[in-house]
Image 1 (cartoon, rainbow, N blue to C red):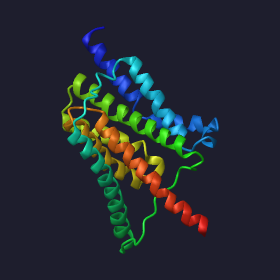
Image 2: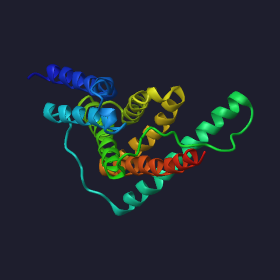
Image 3: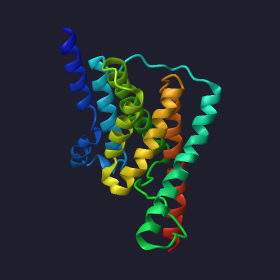
Image 4: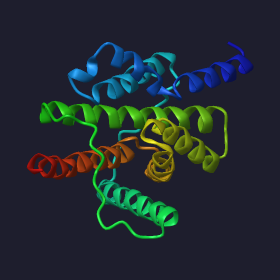
Length: 220
């Protein structure tokens, strides 16, 4: 394999793994959502991670973690939630000229099996981080030698676009959060564990908070 072919194959792999959510429609056709509404999403990301692994472009994964970054990852999960809430409130104020008094967590999980749901949330979070952080940074930064700050933006943008099914506002939210995940990845010496912890805890906290909405709706 010559030098230019190696670059081309890396770019093709990057394009191929950029939109894992394209598989979700197929999995919904197979009625997998009846098992768990988040299973198609997690399964899509998992298959793309497997594909990236066999191409060899997943790179060397750094599993080393610093206790201080673990604490930071925990704190940032709450910060990411706060940022999304503030963004929603700000956009609503700009549109309608008054502040929202109460914000409910969007519920997309049926909660048929809590233990199974948490496992799926974990798989989805770690696979998203492997794709949008590990693979993206390995190909763009290590192989193509793109400026690290440009890679952070590209990684965050592609991650956000994969949430467009939640609406345009969600894309902007996930772009900001994606930048945070990428910064955690970079400053933790490219340890995928750190952004994965933040990502998983953020989704888990939102999952737990959605129970409050479910209970309120049940009472109504």
